[in-house]
Image (spheres, rainbow, N blue to C red):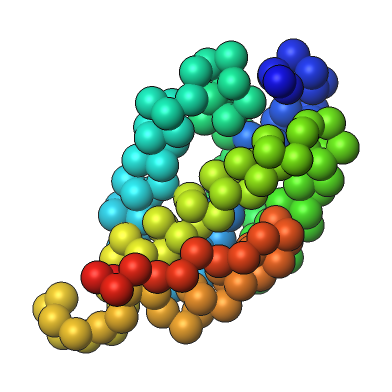
Length: 160
C-alpha cells in the first residue's frame, strides 16, 4: 500500500492540487453557483475521509489541504490549460509510484470532485425552475478532465 511517505513534498503537493484544481476548473467554466459547487467539493473530501483510513493513499490525500489559489492563473483559459497539464502530470506521478487500484482510486476521486462541482448548481432556467444540472461549458471541461485523468465520466443518474 502506498502512503504519503512514498512521495517527496513537491510530488505530494502536485497530487493534492490536481483533484481540487479539477473542481475549480468546473466552477470557473460556468458563472454562478460557486458556493454550492465549493460545498459539493468539500463533501467529496469528507466522504473520502470517512471511507478511507488516514494510512490509505486516498485517505491521506483527502486529509491533505491542496496548495492552490485562483490568483496563480491569469484567466479562465489559463486555468484550464495549466489545469489539464497539472492533472496529467499528477496522474503520471501516481501511475509511476502506486498500484493499479490506487491509480484508479485517484482518478475516481478527482473525477468525482469535478462531477459533483458541476452538478451542484443548475444553470439557466428562471428562479431555479428549468435549467440544466450540468451546462455545456461544464460538460466540455469534464470531458477534458476525464481525458487528462485517463478515465471516463460517470454517467449522470436518472434523477439529475
